[in-house]
Length: 524
Image 1 (cartoon, rainbow, N blue to C red):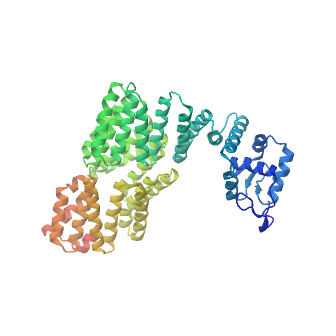
Image 2: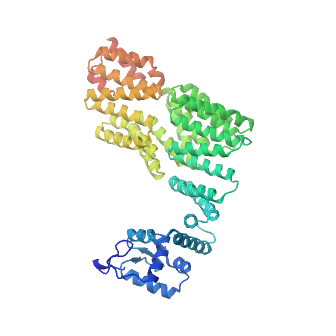
Image 3: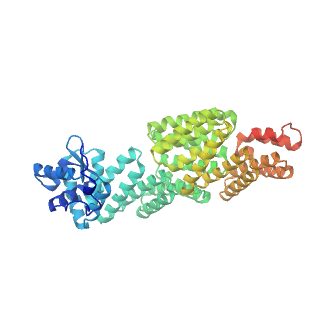
């Protein structure tokens, strides 16, 4: 192992202050090395520079002794001792010099690895992009993006595909079809990472490049934008998009597209609390699916059907669980880690209603998947959904910790549905702590946000919790008013899990029940 030669010889910045002046040969070595990266292979450096091996090895040895570079075990790989120094060397190079270096490095790596691994493909994409060779850059960055997507590294895939899009623009000519394809794929990736504004921009760009003589592609893009509208809680736009896409799919005999359109309509119905309608649309989608449908599509639809069953009462909870487990199996086979996180999440929520500890374990698995694919939204939602389970187990501090962490994550994403749940959870936590005014304020805010987002189920739940809180604090008039409001909002139809608590509160308010305020607190 090589050590440094003392504080006075440590490189500081691009100029190497504190070092004897670098020779022209050493500066050239470091220029090439900095373009490769923090670490570099000796054979690649030799080939790129066209240098004599022994001479280059001697010069690298001097740089190692002076603390500029480190030698990795084996002698074939070196690294900069300080990344800031490498970055300084790189930044000091002119654009024309960088273009030459990266192009030369790409050519050497390409000839060295005729059958490159995914990691080498990504490096070739980077060097050809920075070397301004758009045809080669496009080829390798497309391949690198596909490999990154298959690994679940969606942020990496987006970065590489954005390079490919720039390459297409640089190549010129009529490349509308390729540009539309890249834009659509970018949209899919952005959607998978919950960056809905960026996804919508990509889909819109793709639509602008797709001709009217391509109804199947147009239908797919229109439906994708409708899905984003649903995520943004813009129900009219979502329905309009589905209604526009459906005849286009039908005209081309695209049964998969037809099924996906019914699925979207089912998800819209679910958001509006029409759970039986949602189930019917889900079953229509299932019937429309061709036998050759990919397992990922079947898995996503299975989640939606499970969601509908989960909201139709305790007697069909086990049916919902079966659909979620079926979804998880399909999505693991796909593999589709983004939707797998959703399946595990919903399975955890449903199981957690009767077995909180087991539900928390499933939500922990959800978080592991979400962290692996850098899905902030899925991570935040999983934290939120565990709050009531933790409260049921008496883990008040942990519940508050998870809720606030989720709030910070989802606030950055402007996730309206998630932030509603943060407010509702704050009310539950404050109520458990005896902070009545804070709890009432949180329930009021959650109900108002749900009303603004046209989510009747969430509004009904928040108003019902407010009714229980007011009964607990002996504000009987306020409790009756809130209870009547929750009844008008059809709280038991929209949230069947609250039926037992609703019936108990109805008896309490009528004077027929025996529960005291303290008893009510135990049922929060």
